[in-house]
Each structure stands twice: as C-alpha cells, then as structure tokens.
Amino acid sequence: MKIKDLVSYWDKHASRKLTRDAHAVALSDLHHQQLEALSALYPLKSPQDLLRDLITVTLDEIEAEFPYVQGDQVVAFDEDGFELYEDTGLTPEFVRLSQKHIKRLKARQLESVA
Image 1: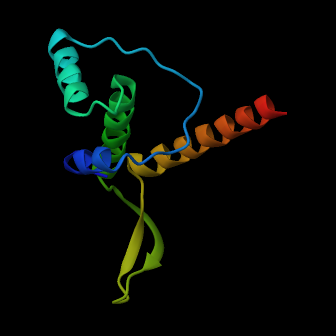
Image 2: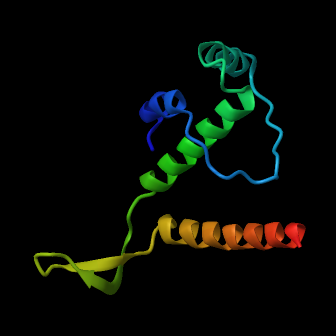
Image 3: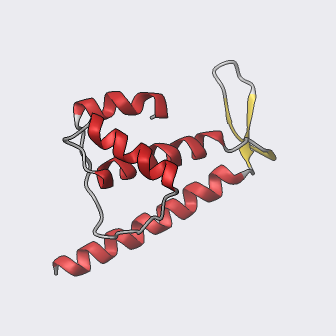
C-alpha cells in the first residue's frame, strides 16, 4: 500500500489482527497538530489507529524502496529466458528479519493463550 492509498484505506475501515505490543511515540508539535487534524477528519479512527496505519504504510514503502543489488547467483529465469540474479541488498535481510520476528511474536501469542 502507498501513502496515497491510505485515505481510501481509512475510508473503508479495513482491519487486521493486532499485536498486544505497544510503543510510545513522541511527536513534534507540528506532527502532533497534523495527527489531531487527521483525527478530526476521520473521527471513527483513533489517533493510535491513524499512527498505526501511517507506520504500516511507511514500512511497506521502505521495503519497496530498498535498492536491488545484483548478486552473482542466478535464482530464476524470466519469461524470455533471461537470467534473474539474487538480490544481495537490504531486502532479503529485511524479509528474513521480519519473518524471524513474526515467528517469535506468534510463539509468544500461543504461549499467552495456553
């Protein structure tokens, strides 16, 4: 999802499963005022919901913007038969670490249910 798509997302009030983890964020006066303005525009969304959505979209965009760094290993071939090389940039490590933390989070959630 792109930031430009976020307003449509908010309008549809989509929801996802949330973790119990919470993070405190200190905002500048300007950003606090802007968050309050968004809260006034979308009164069904709490400031926490808005922040969560903004962070989610930003993290998605950051992952999409990591530059591709061509490695030496051919990992596939495209539809025209051209070689596709492994990405040795930040994306594979980001994905690996994300999966590691998701796995840890799911294990914690299962422990709390048991």
